[in-house]
Image (cartoon, rainbow, N blue to C red):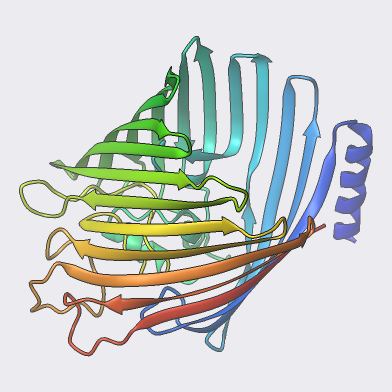
Length: 398
């Protein structure tokens, strides 16, 4: 009865607002992962995501979405079902050069090395001629912990691993932290280049004995070196304040994209990432649990990797991609994996190959299939088996 009442209310509101729309997404994924992967064994996940959008006025826009999901992994159901509030925001544009967002909004730093995902809070963007300024204030304590994946200390990790129990909401919510950001962008620094600077600060609000704050400064330069060839260079410095002890480190990311001429609509992308480990400098821990790779998924501190990706759109309904990457650790202690050899002094972690195809015959249906394999390097214990995974996903949009 409650569901019928909610549906009637949504329909009534949709009819009352001339620019209103609503729908439902059904997403299912089935796959198998070898031991050592993120989800080992056979697995299945499915979710229902209702959404609603409305133009309240010519300057005010509202969007709401939520998700109910259920998973089965290696013979065990992930119960109870997970309920999440997803993107839910008010967008207000009183002037063409000013934009304000409030609610559960998406945030990502320019290079995606510090934070990425949904956060509760507010963001404002102001255009000043050639410069675009964006300021944001975000809170993490009402997010679902495994979606947010914010682990900056052992207390965060301990709470992250607790099974979900709706009788104890501490097992649901992520670590309580505030993230403040200020980004300045020059999208047209020259006819072929752009520049962005970003300053971020993370404040620990957990009230625990161990307090971890962090600050980051990031610069990103983009250049269209030739027709279809885009280059991007990013540098990042970070400070970690762990209960009064201050450490600092660096990250760097270089990327190149080349769209081939012709009618095939294909491109190749190369990336090189480097992050400091323990030594003269220290690891920089991002706010979000950002990882690299598809089968082997290490986090950024103490990591170096190089990858090459080829993407092609074979037709209006079919696209594909193939990727390969190599991984190294920049010190012998920061990066953790259960199968790393405690006696190995090698920095080489291994390489992986991955491919996937996406078929979208209709706007309401999309199917994707992918798989890959990781070949452990000399940093792993002798005899460590290959890691591999394969999955098939179906998305319905109603």
